[in-house]
Length: 114
Image 1 (cartoon, rainbow, N blue to C red):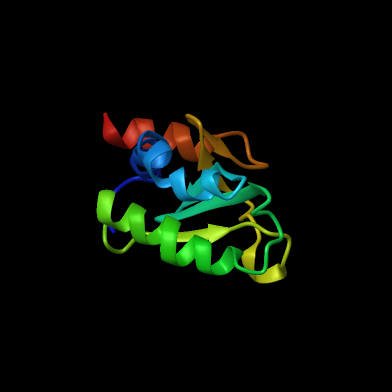
Image 2 (cartoon, one colour):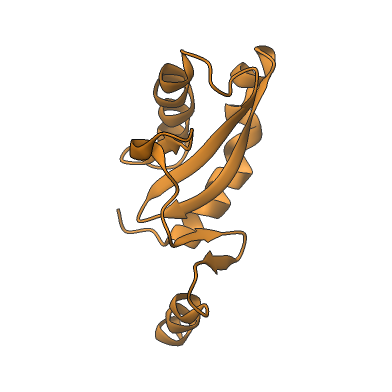
């Protein structure tokens, strides 16, 4: 995918109200956590958190709709506490690089895009 994580994050943030209608109708919600290498990390909350159908909801509702609205190769991961669905150490979130580093990644991207 040729988009920057920042661009994907902003697109998901913009389209999330349309995507979360189904989840809201079931007493849940979707929290956008971050984006890393074209993968969107979310957290299903409310009644959807820990639900046995949360994987299906993530893939067949959230990912499917975001692919229609943003890009067909977009991947969505529900960070649910399992080892295979954990938040990466570094990822883009709300205008900053979430990292244990000093934000060098964001600064470098700004310099390279100038």
